[in-house]
Image (cartoon, rainbow, N blue to C red; front, side, top):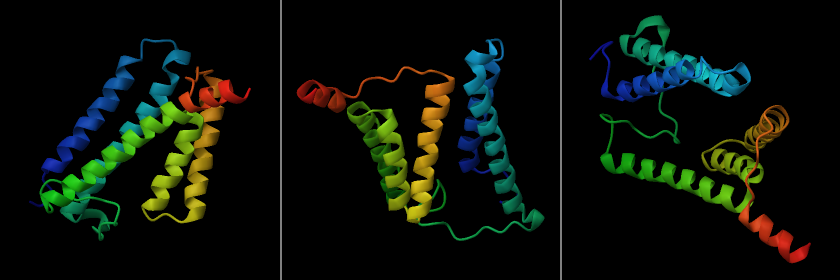
Length: 168
């Protein structure tokens, strides 16, 4: 199946359409209101388009792009591997996402997201410097963009509120 669209590309195409739809939807809004969706949606659509082109060219063998061995953190897609491995990988990802959501509710977004990024990257093979750097990037992003620029209301964390009531 040289150069043809595979079933795995359908999800990528769906995500591309979703990002483009998000950008088109907010075009009529004020810039300050739609800025975040415009930036992230446009960037996401461009990255997804680059992924589609890379995948297509790799299958065609064009441009000198070689398909290298899959990293240990990457699970197989539809037609490539054992369904049990795919299911296990899918359940693991959902576990990480649910753990993040519970952590956000208990400890707050500002604490949970950097710790989650650091834990996720470290358990999936990243070096300490990369895990800490990514976590610090998210701290800067959350505090810089959401707190200082957009002035987002941060929901109260359950455990932090409990400790505040107990000790202060």
